[in-house]
Amino acid sequence: METVSENRAFGGVQGVYRHASASTGTDMVFSVFVPPHEAGATLPVVWYLSGLTCTHANVTEKGEFRAICAELGLIFVAPDTSPRGEGVADDPDGAYDFGLGAGFYVDATEAPFAAHYKMWSYVTEELPALIATEFPADMARQSIMGHSMGGHGALTIGLTYPERFSAVSAFAPIVAPSQVPWGCKALGGYLGDDKAAWRKHDAVALIEDGARIDALLVDQGGADAFLDKELRPDLLRAACEAAGIDLTLSVRDGYDHSYYFISTFMADQLRWHAARLGAKSGEQA
Image (cartoon, rainbow, N blue to C red; front, side, top):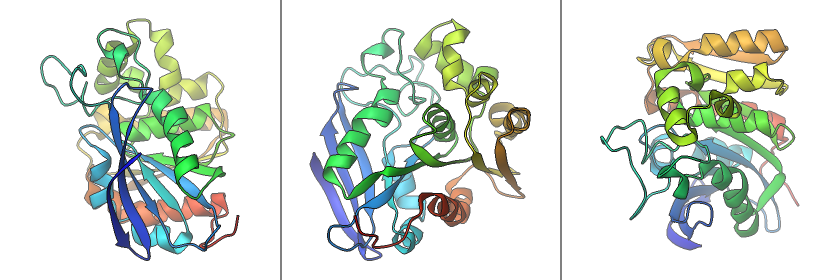
């Protein structure tokens, strides 16, 4: 693991790191904030998955999470959204919603994307192993959150591994990619035409198929331009009601899809996570 940068912040360290990924066959960059803590302590880990066009840098620079993570004693990990580099396939038309910056947190099976687009394996297996080795992380206490495409990733991963994640939340997630244009394009392009293969990467479908988690938290901007066409939180509400999942869906009047929205409610979501993680600054191993 190579250290790209480390900066002191709120008594902790905000770092950016690079490593050669076996999952993607490329170098991958990610950021980690480690709050102040006593020597020998291990701390709970919050995973944040970013949205379309983003890298690790968007939330790292705009998410305003460090003060609350320092207060609560939370490690905050932000991976990239896709493999990058020479030979990595992109959308042939250069569209923003597929290819580079738009990995959709799946393991692609379709050429030419199958060669590198293994974001599910990267986020659920390879990067957690690296975090466990290189940082003071208590891997028995993990939670996951994300925005838009990353909200889709957080919901699907959280529903798939309920025993791993003590809390699952999202900002403006794509809740039913099989039913909206962004998702149909991505899942079809990465996984092929068999829609049965899409269901494990669709939060609403996972719930319909029996996946369960105690509670979900979703914040959604009421003035989000993508609300009705791409995000469809109404479908998640219906699925959770039918399954008996405790969904807190807060529609925030006047807020859009941007990091102005995310940063406004970041502390609220992280406090919700901390309560479920049993987080306490400086907790001993």
